[in-house]
Amino acid sequence: MSESEPASYRIALVDDHAPVRAAFSSLLRSFGHRVAEHDSAEALLAHADLARLDCIVTDLQMPGMSGIELLERLRGEGCTLPVILVTAYVEETLRRRALLAGATCFLAKPFNADELLACLQRGNGCSA
Image (cartoon, rainbow, N blue to C red; front, side, top):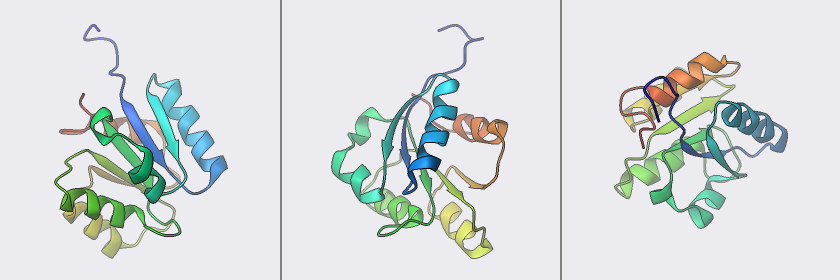
């Protein structure tokens, strides 16, 4: 891949709403990323090979395990995979908790594609 070509990441997308998952997945794929969709944090943990991923993008509020709980569990197990949390319900305490737990980004819906792309490339980001 040349320096002018954007990086292609293997992304796990976790969201409990199928239409949101489909739209988000389509956006990520339009930028050349490979996306594996999961309808819950539990499904991701049960079925994903985390070692084969570059990044996780997850909704914050979901039935069962929340996005922050997923992030905290991953960090507790020593997983340093970049995690981007997305939410329509921005609460400063949750944003702070997510960032302290090691979230790569905390995006408020609605956001634009450039914000998401910046998160994918931020710092240690989703580097393969």
